[in-house]
Image (cartoon, rainbow, N blue to C red):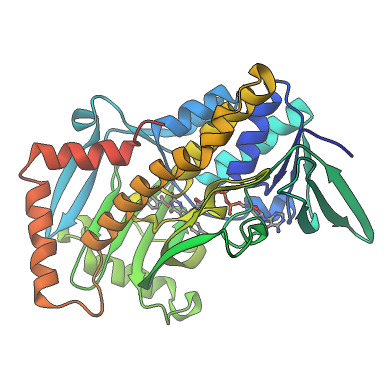
Length: 390
Ligand code: FAS
Ligand code: PHB
């Protein structure tokens, strides 16, 4: 089989790029390790930057997002028993975010690929890129006992943190930068009315918490837990009791609790792999970078990679211009590192670090005081949260 662009990974990054390129007449195939059901069973991101939403609309996948997603003009931070609001709309020059789950984004992308007759292969085993530093790369995968070869001109590694693509870059070329945080997020999904119309990030002496949502009947909550905890260590009741202890009293009093329909613990890490290109292989999304979810930058960092790759490949195929491809890694990393910085800053501001000293506590208090007493600080947080320009 021969295509122009072979995309490894059928998550949001791979699907969005495949859809955008297809609409420009560029032939792609997506090779996904798991079944569609498996991919769609994942509960992940919840907040979309306005740039991501724009890209979904350009990919003809934004209709349900615009119908069912919620536009949020701000969020709140609970600290020292009180709530303060970050007015995103006012301090970002009129921008906002859309609250719409990654699961639904991925579902919309799969359905759009189906509508266009896009080639998406599920249960592709042992996907392996070959000759990526030649002009004729190819990718093999196993379909049961059959070995399939896909000849292509470019390979896109959109296969997430645990994928094969990043590992295909030679060790003497690849540089990895990582910071692992000494705690995780225990998250639950419950068919309950959200405690607040906007997100509430919580800084508390017992640990971080987050009140989020997927709709007005589906709530998403998180609490910071030690890395040694497992989801089965936490009954629903124990989770609700702990969440209430971290919320301001008036918020806790109106919290609607109910059975969890999903419960998981996500470790927190900051990670960047450089460069994001080697020969004809280009990395995008979690294959190249990971952020702690505190700043809601994970999925949104993938969006700018896809935007740059989309325009670079259109430049190559439709205009004979390779400047986008040649400049991709540097341009993508410049924005990736800004998202890393913001996610690290939000994580340092809001979490209780096991090895903290009193100086750290006072620094957190000072950061919080500065944020809510300075319009400049508010603009800085707002422009990062709604998404820096692509
Ligand atoms: P993905 O990991 O989503 O997709 C990669 C795809 O490649 C997967 O479908 C995988 O099955 C496939 N794959 C892997 N190896 C393969 C191989 N060898 N061959 C073929 N296919 C292969 N971000 C936020 O903004 N907010 C959050 O709250 C948040 N929570 C998260 C919770 C968890 C547990 C995780 C893991 C991530 C979370 N993220 C969050 C980040 C997440 O949303 C990612 O940024 C987003 O999934 C990135 O999308 P992709 O780059 O497509 O990677
Ligand atoms: C979520 O709704 O899952 C979510 C929202 C904002 C974050 C992290 C997670 O910063």
